[in-house]
Image 1: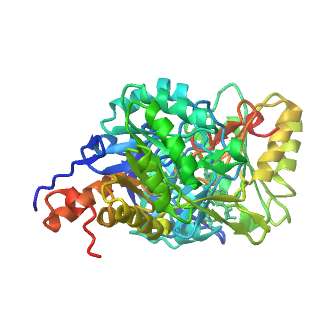
Image 2: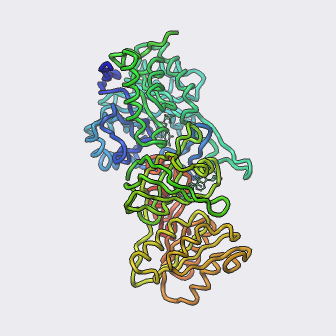
Image 3: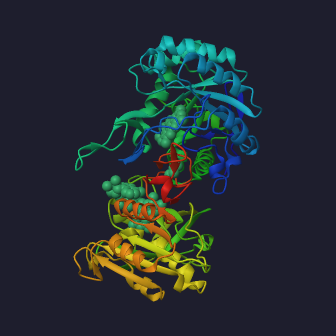
Length: 306
Length: 259
Ligand SMILES: Cc1cc2nc3c(=O)[nH]c(=O)nc-3n(C[C@H](O)[C@H](O)[C@H](O)COP(=O)(O)OP(=O)(O)OC[C@H]3O[C@@H](n4cnc5c(N)ncnc54)[C@H](O)[C@@H]3O)c2cc1C
Ligand SMILES: Cc1cc2nc3c(=O)[nH]c(=O)nc-3n(C[C@H](O)[C@H](O)[C@H](O)COP(=O)(O)O)c2cc1C
Ligand code: FES
């Protein structure tokens, strides 16, 4: 079989391979160290970090759905200071590039969080979760309004010393408009997609299965939606570095996302199914390339015949 | 903790709805403690997606392990159809355990339904340490059919109190009533350790609180990862807003999780 060059560059960031883990599905990586060769991965994206620790939403917070799951964890996290002190030492030494996902409840929280996280040694890039409700605007998500998102991204990019990727929500009519606003504002990459808003009901008890009624749908069930959005954004902005997320389970899924235009790939819910899933996806992607005579994994990027 | 490719060696059907799977290739689980669990999944495609949390009934140094399962939904139904030779992916051992038996104290272990495994393993640990006389087991169910693995418990040679709601086996009534009667007799300050349905744990925790006895409960919650990563298995707690069943538990001080 042919040797395959797996290296990619996501904007300004060079990675040894395109396979990463998705925010909130791989904790702070140390949780998986016993059972997953974390250092083999191109990168890990951490649980979403905020300035202050957050306890998260009332329970139940998760429920399984057809080929997927709903969650309403409520962005529970240890907070920036404990993250830097307790979680970074492992991450810094794990061998994968560290991308820190973050969010705030106000614009100034976002900006301060971006600035402070980017100063932590060992942080390669930030990933902004703009799906967080804006408490000052009656709970409307920043990520649904291209203008608000663009302004917020511009401020965070200016405040941060490392590339800032923006993670887009699929819960919008026009993801391309949002992507454009983020790119214009200096986003170093686009991560898509976050979870799809959904609901599950227990007919026997006549109650919602999640305490918050609605939650975010993830897993193989959402892959077609993610593929479509990656393709739409790539078609509109062929140069934009895209990190694809959504139902990724196999090396072939990874190849599909790259053909649609992705540069990097994030394995999410599948980490719960098998804690070494991302390493298997990487191996399968390499084998897929080798078997097809693809010598550089990046040759797959955007190579969809359409 | 390990991620193992285990093989089903045998399935033993217990009373209707309950079965034991004996697994080979589980050397890495040896030494697992009572209360610890595994995340289990068969090779059954994309749906159901998530692995299921199941306590260990046994984990021997020769690589033989066992789980006792109650069929409640799709995942457990798929497990109930596993036959010898089937492969399962097993992540574990996970979580916290009941404390070691103590020569100086009496432990009263209370189980219901699929809560038997931690209690069985704890009683087996006491028996193996020559302290069978320091533990008593209370197993309750609705009918004689709902006392899974009573025979296994009997074999351990520990004192066993069986109760059924309908009196079809053992004493008639709730397991907690039998527990209270026994507590009135034994006096002293025995430790209570319980695993089973939430209402039973709640009642045991209440008894412990009123009598000021130390009490440990092994909880269940819906889980995705079992590793402390998804933060899905949260339970409201006393000392902080939430504890996580897979990591801080499943065994908790009852006062931490039941008010
Ligand atoms: C630490 C721990 C140890 C466990 N040990 C055992 C064991 O030794 N033997 C055993 O039979 N079961 C055990 N369970 C419970 C077991 O995980 C669930 O019964 C199982 O996940 C149900 O899967 P299912 O696909 O059959 O049901 P589903 O189709 O997922 O659900 C069927 C019903 O079960 C409920 N349910 C789903 N998951 C759970 C859960 N984790 N806890 C409680 N209710 C749930 C659902 O709300 C629903 O009403 C344990 C759970 C935990 C958290
Ligand atoms: C339990 C859980 C927690 C998540 N937490 C976050 C988070 O903190 N920040 C974020 O941007 N995305 C979070 N996500 C979204 C994932 O990173 C990912 O975008 C989504 O799950 C889709 O990918 P998947 O289908 O491969 O899981 C979370 C997802 C799950 C299932
Ligand atoms: S099951 Fe994922 S954190 Fe406990």
